[in-house]
Length: 452
Image (cartoon, rainbow, N blue to C red; front, side, top):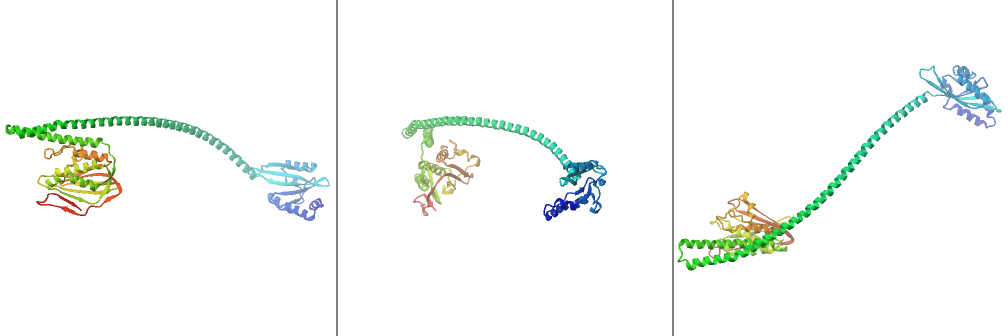
């Protein structure tokens, strides 16, 4: 048969015949060639021998039909291909095996001189392919089921997501509505606050104007009371009894106190109402001016004033700042025991963007529970012992606040007080103290100043 194969390929170069034979010999698929109507095996390749587990010597020269006694369909197909010269294929199951085995046959005729002289057959055992096919089918079925489950889960998730999106949109809409309402309400409240603030400001101005008017108008009759009471004691004192003279003196002292009170009210009203413009003010200059105004009182009380440290330039209203310092110094001279000469220490220190000025004394001090009350109008803690209107510290607080600062006190009863106020610092404005001592004592003068 190989010779016939060679003759069939006789019109081709010899090396091509060898090549075709080599192709069949090394093909991975089992292949065999039969000759004649009896299907006598003339050639098998190694893959075919391995498939049926028999050597080529046992197969060559035998009929394929003898090897396929139970494969009637395959034999009939061989006969048909040989007769008709048309290729065909066939798959059948071998039931003798424990597990189903499927054989797949591909057959095509070998033609010589326009007639069939034999058949080429390729055999494939398809059990593994079927198992894989079944596995693939199972996987596809499971995948389809899983895909259906996933689709249902996706649909459910989409529904939940749509619900969440809808709820979120509702929440966002409610939030926007609430924000709009809040903004509208805030605008209304701002307008209401502005309106009430304007009303309160106008009312305060009216009250301050009323206080100023009352204080100013009452001073004239008070001066009359003071003058006539003094004239009564001076001119008619001999005709008056001792009790009458005492009554006249009391009227005079009350008129003097009332006049001082009205002057303090006028000062407070003026500081509260006047238009002030803040400028750069040298603290040392204002301190020296305040001490000059109080020079007589310092001499009378044999007081000593110590000025230490650096004195920067601050942002202030100079007349208001002078009034603040004079009131604090007056209190330091006033609220001291009668047997103790006043000792006052003035100093300034920088506190960030502010300058803090200290006025320290050796006076009677202030109890902690009263340290916030003393800045209120008409608050007199020692009214029975020391003269005063109770307005001086209120003027201090109002003046410092008008200049954009703040005020406070540190004190202990019996150990003196340390008043302070803060104003904004002007950068680059700082002056050293004089570094000289100017003190006089004895019969020459009772005044003492010292600059360190």
